Length: 398
Image (spheres, rainbow, N blue to C red):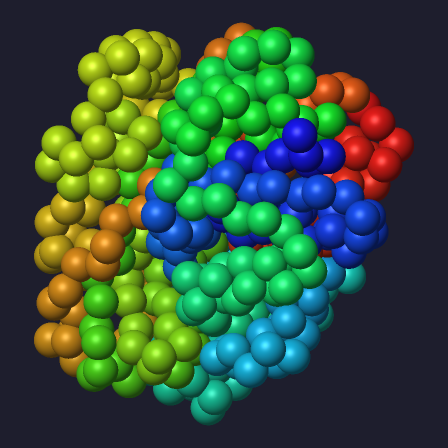
């Protein structure tokens, strides 16, 4: 029997475990992870960008936690001697319509208290001569990059040092009784369960009668890498995003190891761990996911049909490079020749409205808590977000 049983060894699960053990020193906190190490999925396969917090509407949980999360993650990396690249970010416009998009991002950033400043074309040319914009650009000085796997493994160490028991190679199988689940290691009893299972959070939630109107639709993200930064960029360069969907568009990322990469894609996947070929194939998952993807394609909800067609084109190296070229002056693109390890975004779909859920979603009661939608910028937001989950769903109850 444990006091708190957490499912999922990603950045959120580990931070909730750490927060629980910090507050309740005598509590038995156990975290189970089905893989043989933590950070094997989204937490170890994301872009590594620490976002500043200006994309999100002021009434959202993402806005509430991203600015604070950026500062908290900076401090954690520095306190633990982890690598961090203080490379900032520039968001550029390609036409007058996109300048309006920049102004909306600045408005959101101001409401969220995020440090941002305008750069004219001449200022941009002086500071970042390889980047181009139309009339003006947004400069985000607090955006940075880290190694997400390195950071997540350090959170595991910190949690274990506090006394959290981390059990890898331990998969959730089913709910046995109100306060007991079956795992690949046998039955486990708990006083409260916290579901941070990422790609499988919706399925586990349904075993506890939560998440009834949601299903996770996986999107595959890959980058095209320039290992030696031959292109010469020294900051992150982003386009103006379509704020109607949760993807930020193809951009340049200047990584913590001084490499650069173009991407990501947001290609609809056919099963939850559809990383490569038929690895981890599940017919049951494919049938369910294709059913919803077909509905989205036919109805073109939130422009899904156009999104799907354009994303599949990104498997073409030349197509991806051409998208990125609009953000810069002519670069030496010869270094962009290696595809990254794919990552899968566990994007929640509201099946009643056929809309992708934009914000974080948590549901729960006195028995269990379910983190259903913890997509980007969840990594950046993980420290304050986890405190909020403990405040509102564990200390206060649901």
